[in-house]
Each structure stands twice: as structure tokens, then as C-alpha cells.
Amino acid sequence: MAHTVREKSKLIARVRRIRGQMEAVERALESEKGCSDVLQLIASVRGAMNGLTAEVMEDHIRFHVVDPAREADPDRAKGAEELIDVVRTYLK
Amino acid sequence: MAHTVREKSKLIARVRRIRGQMEAVERALESEKGCSDVLQLIASVRGAMNGLTAEVMEDHIRFHVVDPAREADPDRAKGAEELIDVVRTYLK
Amino acid sequence: MAHTVREKSKLIARVRRIRGQMEAVERALESEKGCSDVLQLIASVRGAMNGLTAEVMEDHIRFHVVDPAREADPDRAKGAEELIDVVRTYLK
Amino acid sequence: MAHTVREKSKLIARVRRIRGQMEAVERALESEKGCSDVLQLIASVRGAMNGLTAEVMEDHIRFHVVDPAREADPDRAKGAEELIDVVRTYLK
Image (tube, rainbow over all chains, first blue to last red; front, top):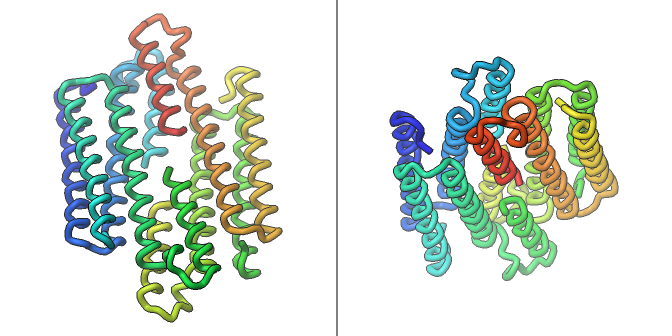
């Protein structure tokens, strides 16, 4: 995992943001905020988790299966590009 | 939110477990574990987030809408009970 | 279920649209359309299923638990309103 | 799409089963079955849609990106195998 220094930093930054969002959920529970507020915060974490999942899957495709930007076979390059689009659509 | 001391503690314990799981995701990225391992850890967090969401929604129904255990109107009690089952089914 | 004639017709219309979308998926497979096209059609069905689920849950809350528009107790009315919003947010 | 006769038939059979399940949802609404029954039927359709989505994605990976069973490069074969496992885990 974490196939380039830049990719690794981006993913770790995403994880840290999610950890910060989870702390906000904990504080909201501690201070007895309304359920709606808590569920709103949880919905943001879920969205951020989807984004993280999509990025890790995309990296996996690029670094361990087929990287559309470097693939010599144009059919495979197109297939991998479409797959990355699909992963993004389904995890949006 | 957090309608009884016991419920509040249970929810906070769940949030802390998820925070611990997110730290494991971060460590896996830092130590350049394989993508599959990272995605496995992320899948566990997603499952735990679903459990947390279901529990907060269930508490909201019981404390702010209709608590099946205390409702005088049997139709409402049954409706709320079914709703809680549905929330659990859909977030499992 | 289907608590008023109008609600019943709306839900059945939604189900029929989804059945039409599933026929489009079948035709796309029969005519050997590209995977991306098929997955795009499937993504639309999933979105439409989420909309149907949210509407059935909302109807259940209104007709069998608490209808915010008719509830005498303002706290329950607010709780049910928030619950309906949450169901919509999570199934969007 | 539908890369072999056998795969095509399997996918079309899945779609037809889902169409049958949607007809059951429509009948349940027509005959004014309880919300819980309707939501149970809808949950089955959602599960079946996940299965269909996973199978179409898996076919896309095998036929248009990398087929682990035929790939000469062992790293790519392993990467594609892991990706298929991940798709199944996330859409289960």
C-alpha cells in the first residue's frame, strides 16, 4: 500500500481528518447534543469513509493491476479507466 | 442525545472502538501494509459505523418518537417496534 | 401499507419505473452493451431503490408511528420530523 | 459485456429473478400488505442488486482488465484476484 510518498501522505491526511471527525462525534455525545446533530456528524464520517475507500481501491488498481496512464495495451488501459470510474460512482 | 447514563456510555464506548480501528488503518498505511489488508481494516470500520448509526437511530426512536416498551397505544408500539427492526436490517 | 389511495399510486408508479429500468438492464445485457453502460444502468436502479425505500419508511413513520403533521405532542412531532429527515439523508 | 455465452445467461437469469422480486413488491403494495413485509421484500431486492453489481464488476475485471486465471505476470494476477475479493466484500 501507499505506493508513492505523495499518495501515502494524501491517504494518511484523509485518515487523520476522519479521526478528527470521530472525535467530534464523541464530543457531541459527551455534551449531549441532539440526536439529529450526532447523526449529521456520523453521516459526514460515512461520506469521508467512502472517499477513503474509493481512493485506496483506485490506488490498488493503478499500482497492482493496470495503470491506465502507463499501460501499453489500449484495451486494458480503457478497461482499467472504466473500472476506476465505476468504483468512484459506486462509492460516491 | 445520550438519553440515559448507560446508553451514553455504550455509545461512547462504540465511538472509541471505532477511533481505535481508525488508528489501525493509519498504522497500516504508515507501515505500508498491502492494499488488501488496508481495505479489510476499512471494511471493519464501515461495519462498526453501521452499528453505531443503527444504535443512535434506535435511541432516537425510543427516546424522542415512540418507545415500544412504554407506549400505551398498541398500534404505535407495534409500528415503532417494526421501525426499529427495519433500521437494524437496513444498517446491518 | 399504501395508506391512502394517493400514496399507494405514487409508490406503485415508483415500482413500475424501477421494473422498466430493470428491463433496460436486461436489454443491455442481451445486446452485449459495454460493462460501463450496464453498470451505469444498475447504478440508476440502485438510486431508484433507495428513493423507494426512503418513501416506504417515511410512510411507515407517518401512518404507523407518529405523523408530525397531526401529532398533538410537539416533542414527538419534532422527533418524528427529524427521523424522517435522517431516513432521507441516509438513503439519498 | 456478457463475455461468454455462459456468463451472459447467468447474468440475464439474475436480472430476471430481480424483475420477479420487483413484481412481488408491486403485488404487496397492491394488496396493501404491511410496511414491514414490503420493506422486507425491498431488502431482498437490494441484496440481489448487490450480487448482480458484484458479478458485473468481476466480469469486467476478468474480461477487460486482468483475468487472474490467464495472466502471465504473477503480481498482476495477484492484484486482480485481491481486487475481485474486495469487490465481493464491499458489495456483499
